[in-house]
Image 1: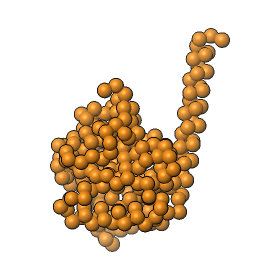
Image 2: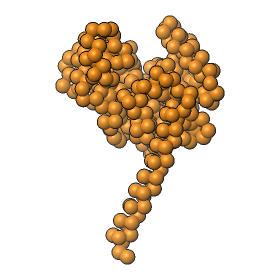
Image 3: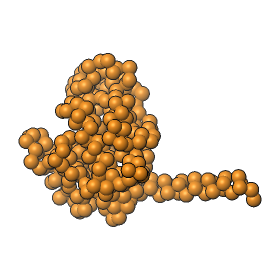
Image 4: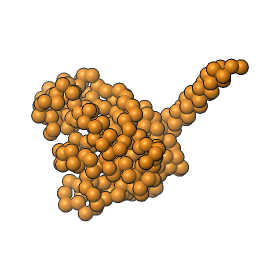
Length: 275
């Protein structure tokens, strides 16, 4: 057997092993998506949020240590908690307990009640996140994956580039060398960068990549898993015009329901192995 043939066989075996690993991961994620503890209203949104493909793309495994940033009401927590319950670790980095915001306090209290309401959440470790320097989302260098879903626009509206840099620095510190940062966000078309987009709920993909790279991340891949070509990102009430918010009420409701949820970027970054 020639060296070239040996090399080809090695690559084929590696590809097979990766395929088997990915298949096993997707099977475990699907089981978590199908877990009976999930809220029925949340399962209706699976068609837009594509959790199996998204989590597999971000390399989440049942034995991963995962940090979910700003989990809100817990849409993804409902999937991550059963997925990681037996062999993994889940940090839910929610609003700080000492936040002066009534919304933050109310949302955190509701999330805490949810975590106490079912044993599947018994191992979820509640931590804190804010785009400020005095929080720790997880022990430094402990996480395999850090995930943020539809949050970038909020941090940018609150503090611009500086808040975003602080956020990405938190993610970088929490990850192990070689760990993955997964970002899903409402995507602003690059052609609309000259518009007044900053309070629209949409965010430019190019800026997300630039700020992550400034923190030391390597941009590894993008996916169109959560793309929606019907979304023009120029709606009267921004992204909240679309479902699930439907801020215009009955006005053009059928039109926005036909569009569906927003067009979203899905970006994978990696913390370099060598620091």
